[in-house]
Image (cartoon, rainbow, N blue to C red; front, side):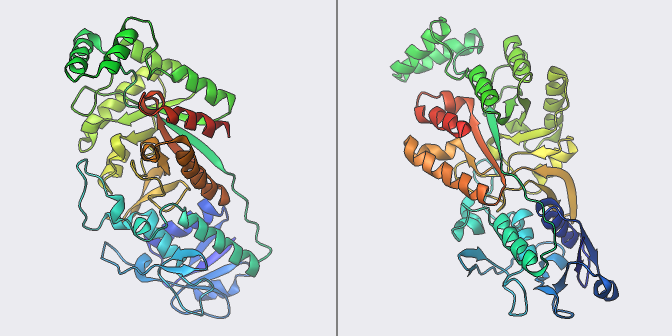
Length: 428
């Protein structure tokens, strides 16, 4: 057991210590404010406060973990060797920055509580993030810091047993539109043909007609192929289906369409299926609860996983709503159009609500890339290079590599390299 001494135990302090040591390093940790207990402890121990007590393993504490609420913190990013870091300490500290306060700042999404301009969908902009502004968005920086902390602890306490984590890949498949042309009803299908014709989209008109006539398979209907590939390569995959009423942004097949309902249930026999929150449920928890109940009634299984439409995570309200709707695992923490680690980590973590100063019963599973962000690279080679670099960064720290692809992009006629990219990814 590792003992950590501090001058004051707060909810923030307890949260990050448990996350770093129990969740990431997988070692039992105990916290104390009693100097006599710390001195008597014969095993590995850390002092986390303003001054060391003796000649122990000491990390000088920043004030962040002892505060309440939000304030605008002046952050200066410096280098620890080749690794960016902030909240610098002094020469007495075993590590030249406060790894715990810095990790809390990123994982809690502290910066997203500060005043900022949201985009048209109510989302936090990647341009406002400290990671993007300082060039380390492409690194799971918290995991790198903790790995270096582990090295320092083992050097000081060589008898410590710190189990090694294993690299994992979880593939998320978004299904906001299950079919491009089929299953849309006579009125929507006829309207689609007219729109294509009047817009002089001759190729799309032809594609629509040959699919509707049964000559060719719908391009978005690639589910059986994906399931087969997942089984073949033993990939952990979760299909997130939009199962909502029709609206301006939610234009999937009707929830009452029997073939759509059968599709969801058939995939559930092989891979995990869960709910993609509708656009209209962003600020309406009652809609979210209704959609979840309907999905449970369909698959006859618990529904705990969730992805928010367009990754519309509004900290902390969105996560409070998910808890209120009885979801326990979120997969929305990431940027739709920019690859990287939004929370600075590739390790799932429980969400800490700074407004209430408490940990919520919601496990956040951060993804690092969505297929929409890869289209800008125009070809397979460039996109694959970016994807492989992210994967290598996660593999270095034995983290969880979570990717988001969609049946729409995999089957899309404008993005023919996305399918090849995805199939090569899961084969590797």
